Length: 353
Image (cartoon, rainbow, N blue to C red; front, side, top):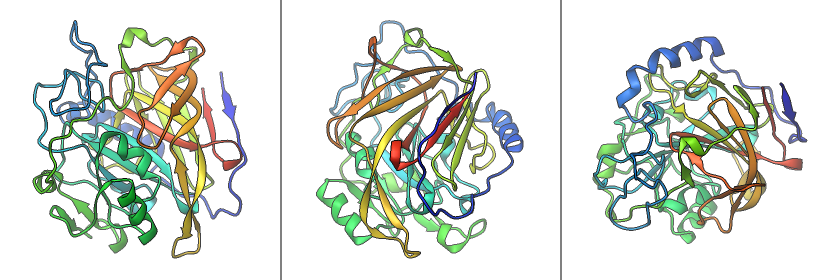
């Protein structure tokens, strides 16, 4: 069955971007799945018997599960906060580093019809992540629920003021761990970060976040219809595609370095409102702001199946609440790719089958 959800797209966008051929990227991801089993992007594990995946609370000691995946923890509490790195998601970012070690990935709209990734690390820190690009006001709603450290190459003055007002711990190029590597990228896309080195410089290490999503057991998930192929179209420039391989949803048009892909156990699409960040980029494009609070429709893809529902988030720093017509919705513990897809007149469309 093919279902198409279509909405009016932003006007006057330039020519569509090109990604690696899907077949080649998919083959590389499948081949890499054995290599990455122990690198923070490995196979999903069920919570241990008698363990409540919802038991993690904000505090100073990690509970039984990792807050960004809901998977059983190894008993240690990291000596660093959650770290969110802004990673470029255009052709110029090829290859991206560090995605295979991420706990969670959020894709958000930026100017010109392109997207960027807010890549969240907690259980594993790679020595190379990037290319690191600039922050946006949209990031406030992504990082504040976990009190995460936000790493970017920089930010517009108005964005820095808003990040500071929201209490975001913001770090830009020049902090310990950041460096330039132009061997595979142009100058604009040559900023990378060594996260273990960076983490040693963070002064406030005490905060342990609660669950980023309402985590649940595999047995609690009941799909309403098949969904093994997903196409998330943000604009004429950006479409992100996933294919279910029997275990994971693999991003088939990824820019990730071979052997370093993010293997999503679930894809969570949240329809969001888009606002105006209040300034333009150097090319004259208005910079949008994803309003990651309020409420909207959701589609949760897991195990080759789809569940529909509604998400709500009272404020930017509030936790996500997910519901269906039958009641509260939980996400099976694992690695999740979240799509903040503009809704209705703001543009965006979703196709799956």
